[in-house]
Amino acid sequence: MIEELKEYFQDYLEKKFEKISIKLQDLQQQFFQHKKEQEINIIEHKEKMLANYYKLENQFQSLLKDINITQKQADEIIEKISKKLVPACNPQKQISFIQSVYPQQVQSTFQSNINLKDFNNNNFYDYSHKTADKTIQNIAIQSIVHPKVSNFDESQNIVFITKSGVKYHNAQCNYLNNSKTPLTIREALKRGFTSCQRCS
Image (tube, helix red, strand yellow):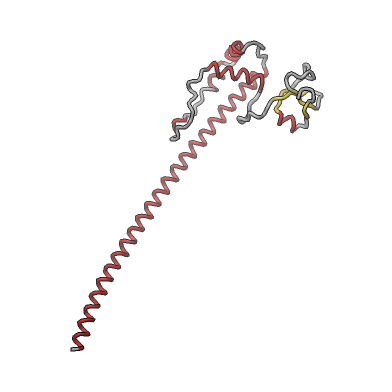
């Protein structure tokens, strides 16, 4: 009798353990399958993010290149205009003068080939409605007050030095007379010039 009970319980336990083992194997298989799918999804997501990053980086580099080209064109035009005698008259005549001397350069400089629509971010301000006269008028004023603009640095105010002097002056200083060379304050300080006490 005891032997029969032992065999019965042994058989019962073996079947139970077999069922538990099958369930564990099934759960383990599901776990590894889920883990594999997660890893594949993560890899695909990383690849998409990396592709988007490179795409944005290329767009950014292209934008910087276009900005540098446009800036160089603007610098060249402003430098050429500053070397010529711009009529000391009202802004409208100055605009006409600039248009007559550099019509193609002025037009091409401000027809930038930067296409901001390539970007997903639409927070850029659209300046396409601005009139050409206003743009050219700004160039005319800038060509007199700021002979050259570099790297979008508006803090580089223009001063003047004489051939034999050691100080820099503003445009209205009496010390200038007929001898004056324009340059930025930064460049003047770099060369060792100090501020004129009369006009500063």
